[in-house]
Length: 292
Image (tube, rainbow, N blue to C red; front, side, top):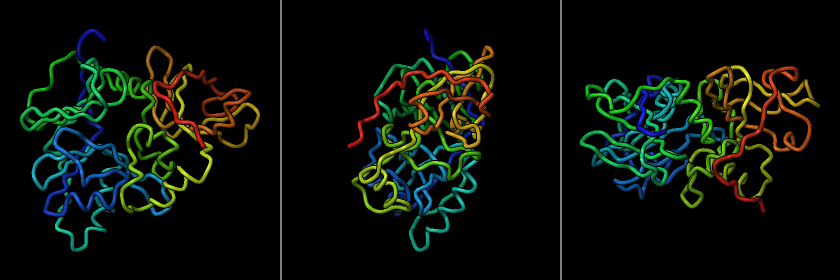
């Protein structure tokens, strides 16, 4: 893309964690290391159940001393805030919904930088995302929109899926262990940090088990929706995967889908039913490390 383009992500919100224990509290609850979080990087992180299933995915950064902000899809924000608050107990950490204070933008065509690098611009931050020239910008709600040509929600969703990324949405809460959406490959899991809910299962999936499901990118005719099931031609009764992210335009969709790896070996995959639109595989823009 020759110039920067931008979209106000109206379906995103922000949680504020504030207090002397904000960092240590989030470190103990999320899949990422917040204890060593500096001011020039953000963290991709997940919040899991005790069974290692993702309740939410988010990006977190230090906004100020004793203050961390978490940006995430709004449809998972209220439940995440409520559940996290249950575990605060005596920690000096106050969790609040700061969505009314901050606007979240998706940017395309920005200078390519290492994923999760953070640049500050007054009270605004710009965070490089995986993929070429993609960024998240979070700024005070009254500030002027960032420069750039306006794009549509489908343009942004297309770029997200094309980059092989997916966020937990309302339709996919508890659908995935992090590795099922390549979350650890994208930098969302730190396997060296201490315990957090679901840590044992997430670690076991990484080191002791054979991962049987992964995020893959496809293209198909028609529109696709998050949470829509995917079926294999040889097994029309049981879904082989689920749409985790998708963008549609020009009568076609790019789909980031969690899929049984065995279903990729032969036959064909279809959207919605075994008679639905055929999925055409596209190459992931990053490498999946081989399993031991």
